Image (cartoon, rainbow, N blue to C red; front, side, top):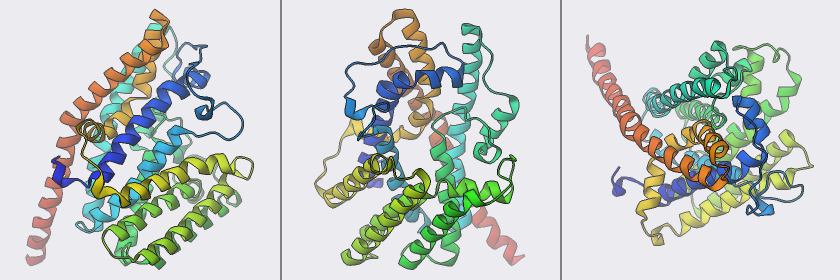
Length: 381
């Protein structure tokens, strides 16, 4: 997309977040939690640690550390909180959901097919069983894993499930008001807090499927992230000059407090500071870059990473982990394994961006335009 069609500080943050989440998984998570990777995908285990990863960024060190993956995800959540209200200024609820479906699902389904084929091939190479049943594959196709208590084929898509819930919340909210309404944002946050609090007290969640308990728990356990996304919506209101600076500061403090309460309800007090640190840094970074947005220079490499950020986010784990495993078992070099996985996944992400993501978005816009033409005709008839 042309540079003038993007809000550059958002595009920059998207590119930085994409780089950080890949860095985290390739330089930290894969090696420190390789037993999880091996068990999930039925890969051979690799007993190796990267010695040059600072302890402060380790996920296995006890004490006060910074999870770079969580920091990157927090940036993505704030970006969504900012851009979704912008989209809803131009689209009604129905058209918005169609737009989001064609934004999310084409690339996701393409990546899922690639992952299933690669994992099936890997099971033959390693002499292991294919790790997922047909029911699990079907549930992953619909992104309903959390409702049916099934495994996730792509370990990063838990954030997509949160994004989808945020889209639905936004579409419903805009049928009554808009995100200019400060009281609406606070009401949504309190409803999410109530769902989180009530989740342990409802019965029937052990049974997979679409039932009230699973719906409540699915939203409730993700309430902290949904509340956090609304902080990004506050920056949107300041950007559009719907709120004054005083209104923005007060609302940000309220939303941040509600997010902290939700995080405490979800994770308890033992790890609260470590859990909040990446979100606090993401919030500060977002505000600073927004305030300095007019001074930030354009960067073609970061713009490229931002453009392919969604397909890269999807392919870099399952596909990337398999490449790292195969290359490491052959050459015993962590850095070579990471380099080949990184270049391969960036190339694959670019292909998906060109062949699937862009055409999918155009198809969604075309469908919306057709529906807008057909509905007035039907009304006249």
